[in-house]
Length: 370
Ligand code: GAL
Image: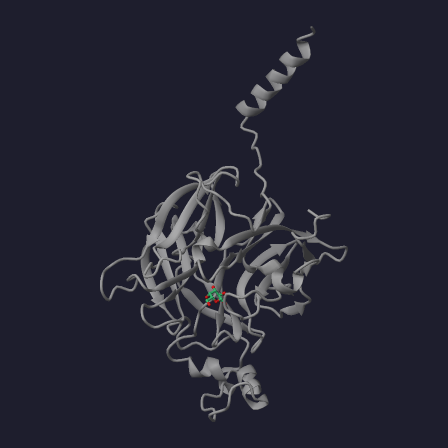
């Protein structure tokens, strides 16, 4: 037997590993089946995202209680992986607690956590949608927490509405009408008033509402908080300062009255893209696609990026994040199970680009695709 080729192959393998040639991980397809961690449990990290740091992937998401009555959210869960397929449960990195009156007292709601590493401070910064115990979805706060280690513990810095006292950049502050008549919701006059900034004006003093959200870090290192504001009627994109923990006051309103939630933003070849959902709570609806040449707009709305079977319901899912892996993009979504939120399923599907460079997603239910 000629063992020369075998020796050559071994040598090449040895040399490449010695030279540290990076083996690139690829995103698995997840089509709504259960997805087990290293202990065999379905991964309980919903409305989340994946952050990469030094070759490790950190999956952060909402830990959700199962259907046992009285169970409450434990906080933000983290799982780690080096290949995006095998995930180790790292526990709760931002815990809720039992302290009466504490902002994170059990019974509060913690949703859509997003974590980014801040080069200016060397800290890991987590933003999430935070609702206070006993107030349902009334507080509409954005909360920020930081940690020295991606595995936490993350410490809460603030939970509040945002951009207090500052008008958005795409409204003339002199024309921001603060005194609106009491209009019936969904009438043409009301809709017109929303477009003109009625809600922005209403909340100017106390800060803008912030519910479904994401954090986007641009190529120049600037970070932005993208959130559903104005009673979920209007999206805002707000710049963060170099510590990623404060708003600078520079922000724009997008699609006033458009009812967008679940924003997931990515940038490809200099174009900003955003996928959102409509507002139907846990029930799925049709995804929306938006594009812009500049982060502060103008933003243009395009047709549903989903194609094929169940595309009109985003394949039963709702966007949470678009993961950029060396220029390959994956649409990450949650298939919510409101009866047992812990059993909500994950949907990870590739984002492809058509001949015009417009992103699209193919149905996991079309068996001839993927
Ligand atoms: C959805 C939202 C989820 C959660 C849910 C509660 O519209 O995207 O994050 O807040 O409503 O009903």
